[in-house]
Length: 227
Ligand code: FE2
Image (cartoon, rainbow, N blue to C red; front, side, top):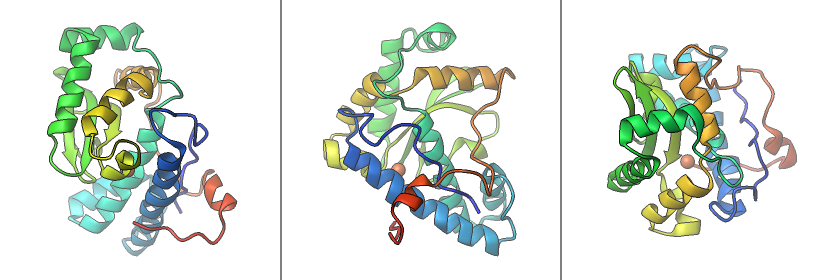
């Protein structure tokens, strides 16, 4: 069984960029639903017990869209929580240098990230990734993620689904992305991911099945998930 990973901060820790209400719904309802559906479908597919990263890739290979969508969304959200920190973390050090090399400046990177997110039609994710061509910004549709994109390694991601921002920003996705980049994005985490891509340290991995987590389910017994 895959656990719903606990948030690495309190529900109100990302205010004012992201309200406690948004974060609580997002984690406790949306993310939980993806994790629970993944548990059900991975069992049926004979993949339960494998690392979630393998489940995502295997579901993609087999064309099992429902399992892929839920497993990838379980993974994407767990990664997304790590991409944020209270007050954000300044873009410094080697990540800043790599961003300046790829985009010219940190502000130009933020513009490119915002533009990609605003220009993305419908639900999905906007990513800062690294690969053989250096750093670049991409967006993916619905549940699609970098686990099924050969040669790309994720540094940061922001959720473009309306549930991520509608309570706080209504239809202003641009305002959400700008606030997120300045007030919530953890460039420190992005830099750790960049080091991992170079073989220095471990990159993010979803908690192993049967591992710790799911504090929220103990705090709110009997609550039903919803999509
Ligand atoms: Fe989401």
